[in-house]
Amino acid sequence: MDTATVVTAPEHPTTPQGRNKVEVRPRVVGLGRHVPREKQELTDKSGRVYAKATPGDTVRRATKPMGPRGLRRQFPTKLFSAQTLVHYSLHFLFPAVLALVLFPAMWQAAYLMMLATMLMDLDHLLAKPIFDPLRCSVGYHPLHSFYAIPVYALLLLLPALQPVAVGLLFHLFTDTVDCLWNFSHCHECYLSSRIYALRNWVKKLLGREVAE
Image (cartoon, rainbow, N blue to C red):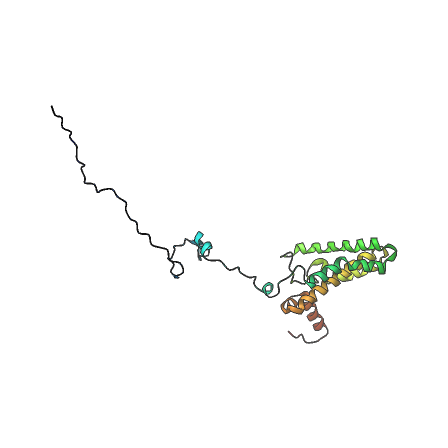
C-alpha cells in the first residue's frame, strides 16, 4: 500500500524569511539643533526651583567657574607676593637683627623670646573668619588691641622681660605695615579698620571735623 504523508499547513501565513533592510540615518553634528531634555527640578524650603543637572550637561557644556565676589575678586592674594615676603621676613628674620643690636650679650635667647611672641596671633582664633588677608588685625583682635599697646610698653621697664616687650611691640609694628600696604590698594579695607575709627576718634577729641 502506498502511504501518504499529511503535512499540516500553518494557521497563519508566514512571509518568506529574508534580510530586512534597516535605514540608518547619519547623525548630523554642528547644525545647532538640540532636542530639549527634561530636567528634574528641585525645590528648596524657600520655594525656589532649581534644575537638577543631568549627566549630559557636564559632557556637552563646560561650566564656567564662578570668580570670587567682593574685594577678593578685585585684590587677589598671592602666596609669594612682595607684601607676603616682607610681612613674614619682619616676623621671623628681622627680630634676629634686633636681638643682635639691643641684646648682644644674649642675642640668641632674646631672638627666641621674640619669636615666642608670635603666640599672640592665637587671638585670631576668636575671629570669624579666622584668617582674612584683607582685614587689619591691629585694633581688631584682643592681643592686638590699642589697649594692649601701653601694657606692652610698660614691660620695657622690667629688664628680664625687655626682649618680650620688644617682640610684642615689633609684632604690632609689622602688622601695621601690612595694614598700610592693604590700604594702599583697598580703600574699603581702610574705612572698615579700627585704625580709621581711632583716627576719627582722635579728630573728634581734638575738635576737628571728620571728613568721610
